[in-house]
Length: 326
Image 1 (cartoon, rainbow, N blue to C red):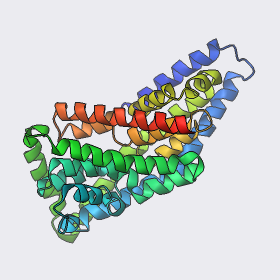
Image 2: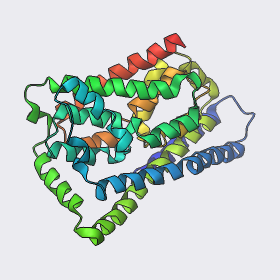
Image 3: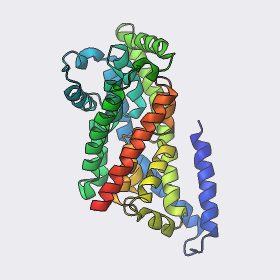
Image 4: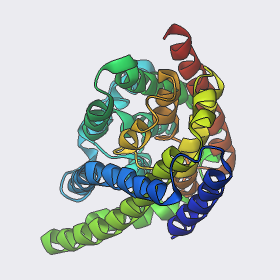
């Protein structure tokens, strides 16, 4: 539960910056009021989508057979990974619920390259994420298209690269088999009553985890808009490369759910170039502090280092390229 401490620390830093800033046309009281208003608007707009995402994930996890999508996959790796990268349309989990689903696929015999293809693409191509991104940006500046198309291309690249690794088992942690067994028992559910009880428990846990992250992220976004001098963001956001890097770092730190990250970054939409926004929306849905902690339960440290490097380089090229064409 570090989010409240992070939010308070960020608020203190931003207040100091605001007091030290030469822009004294707005009082600290007005700034605090604007900060709360802006932050609450993000919460009100995005919370329903968080709850919807949790409900869909629970339905797929406990009430539908997980092996349903694995029965008729083609043998050709290229075609198979393209199909797997679209699984998120039918398994609409954000990155928060992505690791258990990926772990389940691996335990049922899916190879690591294919599983990573799903892991990368699923949180971005799921319908909830696409709808929220459209609600936030519409079709303007190619943000929605860049996010979805970029994620699909990246997912297939990651899957292909990791499929070439000769010692596949070394990509996983030694404790993965035990984690898979525990996960399988959890999915077994124990009949209708057991599944209902498990669904309620997961709903409580996921709601708490997501809303705490969302609240912290929303208030940090509001603080950035209100307390940081505008010219700092404008100068940084106007750079076609450093703007992408800055928002990738922001996405890594705030670790906000992909179902609602479009609402989070919308507040900076007029400051940063479209490529930087896409960089935030693609990178943050795959690699952030929370995701690395989750992924470490399944994948080795070396795997995560390579995955992070590949994703970061791809997203930097994608965002910078979009900015160059804007």
